[in-house]
Image (cartoon, rainbow, N blue to C red):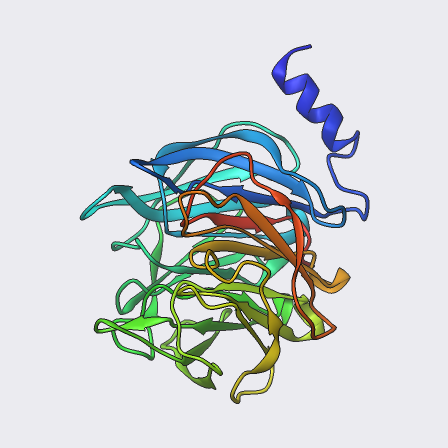
Length: 314
């Protein structure tokens, strides 16, 4: 059976998971001694190991992923090309419901090696927040280079994760790292309105390279792991304030630099990859119910600095 035919059969005739969406992708990652181009897929509603989806256009790690929800386009933004200070400004894209290799979308306006990706779902705006002060944005359904959105609130913000409440238009970003120190800062923006970030509140524990997930318009955001921390926090996205304790990750040592995505209002969050050279683990939470994470399965490859997206948000 041809490769493409097999993958389309796995996704089903409509190219979607069991709940009319539910396809989550994990892309890229650093596997010693080089970054990689592998893209994996899972059905978010069904725990199990990931399968191969295709390849990105570059071997890279770090950066970020986001998507326009049920419209099923995912974008992969920036990252590291090699160990050291060589960076990617590439934005590539995939159709989440059709397995295959990524295509060229355009370029970021500035270096986005440790950035946070988020979107307003079917309203079609994608954001790359952090790595440096300028914030980039794109229209996800239209290829082209990113444009300037504004500046981050927390100076030199990087190594955070992105969370949004979808079409309710708020994006929240746990910043993660500033001037050589892990931070507990949380910024936010209104995704539909160009402008600078503002202060949202603080994490319960300062850390970098967290995984972000949400249940979309139901307004709960979750921030998992980071910096070898197993702490999971939660926030109400529409209400500024400090994060509260949600539970703990399964893997206490490998929770840094995992890509996080979700099934939106279906309340399942998944995050995968990790900082350890032996980590393939994907973990899962029920976003609406505080508690510890559970094991979901494994990626097909090892690697930290994974990007993630899904076709679930409204």
